[in-house]
Length: 257
DNA sequence: GCAATTGTTGGGAG
DNA sequence: GCTCCCAACAATTG
Image (cartoon, rainbow, N blue to C red; front, side):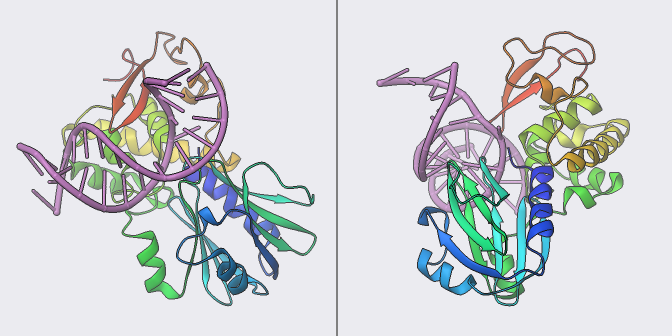
């Protein structure tokens, strides 16, 4: 699930509960999510430090401390939650003890995890080259980015090297709003379609970030995800699924061309 | 037992 | 370098 809106929600969890606070203790419950160091070294290096600033870059969440920067990536099933209960949630992998409670890094599948990085160069090295953050990208910028690629527009939108933050669900949602079929070649879109894509991206992200997820209300394509016989919330015809770039796309053959 | 799953990476082919 | 496809990572569900 975690795409830009979800990660922005996790950033707010950090902001609300951890900013200016000291990390009293760290417990690595599953070493499999800690990268570049042992669980014990991870605990030792972070314990006692203060979290001074938070930042989101695409689907990455950064927590700056008065020591190394803590980096989170949530893969397909990760999350960050505040808890004041002692009992461990299922799939809790790392616990950051803070005054009055703790932050839990939860992740069922453990596809990604947590990293420590000292300085900007190390952060860049861990995150790699990413395109501009989708939430801070204008329609005009999106047009330029999309035009430069010949692959399916859906694959281009999901390519973090091109544009950082969109995933399978948000890409489907904004393509549906812009009435563009996911398999269309990016460089063959008309000006009007590119404009619609930009407007759709900004409105989808704005509404999603507000609630920390892609909304599933009646007017959202996402409401049809996972139902047995999905129908277009706009024209009510049957939706279709196609395999694009190795992922399942949900789209409306009536509305999207 | 088999297929599929919302993310990313690396390898290989063309 | 670009594009596409596949396998792998891990755990669970249908």
